[in-house]
Amino acid sequence: MSAERFNLLSFSGKMKVLHMSWMAFFITFFVWFNHAPMLQAIASSLGLAPAEVKTLLILNVALTIPARVIIGMLTDKFGPRLVYSVLLAVCSVPCFMFAMADTFEQAAIARFMLGFIGAGFVIGIRIVSEWFPANELGTAEGIYGGWGNFGSAAAAFTLPVIALWFGGDDGWRYAVGITGALSLIFSVIYYKNVTDTPKGSTYFKPKNLGAMEVTSKGDFFFLLIMKVPMYAALALLTWKLSPAGVSMLSESTALMIYVGLVLLYAYEVYNVWKVNKNVFVEEVPEMHRYEFKQVAVLNVLYFATFGSELAVVSMLPLFFAETFDLSPVIAGMVASAYAFMNLMSRPGGGWLSDKFGRKSTLLILTAGLALGYFVMSLVDSSWPVWLAVVAAMACSFFVQSGEGAVFAVVPLIKRRLTGQIAGMTGAYGNVGAVTYLTVLSLVDYSTFFLVIAGTAVLGFVALLAMREPKGHMVEVNDDGSVAMISVD
Image (cartoon, rainbow, N blue to C red):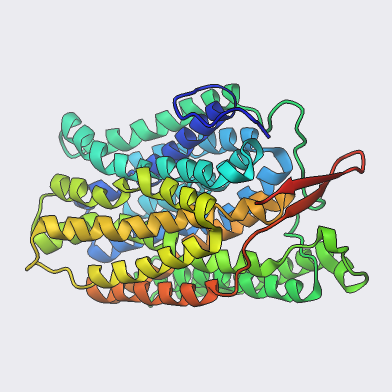
């Protein structure tokens, strides 16, 4: 843990790691949402039907569900420096594939594969927690998440302009291709400029890579229950792509996927048992325990916060274009106001958590989230455009501050499992996105916003069960000595 002063203008020590990490995250979101502001041009170029456009939106977030869990495990095992660099390099490939797609099927496969880059977020959560003390952690994680998340707004602002600059029907292809090149180049820059921990610090790794560790019998079953929605979201996506939806998959293929998901869940149950069977034989010492309910509550909250952000960022340009009859470029710029709030809101949520307590901050922000989406459900063509933008920005403040407050808690549960906890919590954000985007494909915009408001209320109720992090979490050094890590 670095003891140097927190100075945003510095580019050395822990501040350099923070800046390099939010830049990496920024690029992942820049790539991940490089299609959203140009959907109308892409649809026209590829001859896509409205249902196919909405399918691309769902595919873009689907693979991120298992990817965040997998990347979280790999981060804990191999370290964030290597994993982030490899992810940025590998995900440039499907980005180039999407830029060169000529059919819906090619575009769909590329967008599905690009969902993996959305897992980059969880990597930075671990590296930031290694470099910053508990009293600065919420602020640092908020800056990492908020400034990185701004990549989606940057995409909305710049990519339509770049596409217009290149001109013609293929302008969007050049714009998308540039984002892939940026990802590939920065993978090398990141690897050469960060380390996993400050000099002399220990990087604690999980005892097993196959599944998340739990410390009680009840938590063993709780973990298995919390895994179900992730598989349900993938089943929901399969249904959307089956003949019951857009008919991208045949009935037999969809059935095979359903069976595969059941078998995969059974295999995961086996891995969870293999890693945690000791809790049924002997009691875990008090000092080494953690409460899995802390993870479960954060999962539910991130479902409502980041899940709704992913869905809304994807659909908001179309919402403004259709509601107020705006051009694609103007609609993209107007809609980017929602994501623009990330610059201050997410760091603000982390800072509030550092100063005024984790749980109380989350309660207030979750209540504001529910109210914000209720107001968004009232927006229609009779509203002035500026007032609709103000409503979207106000709603966005609570959404993104809530995300910052959630990840002000994640690194304070169990240090060696931070990547896995961040991965599962992050995956729930994508479960939320798939759920909300599927709802959007079935209902009008007003009902869509009301559904999000309803889930925020459920999140508020779940939050009442969370315990404020206090005292220390315990890890064991390689030499067997005990390390006490403050969470106050």
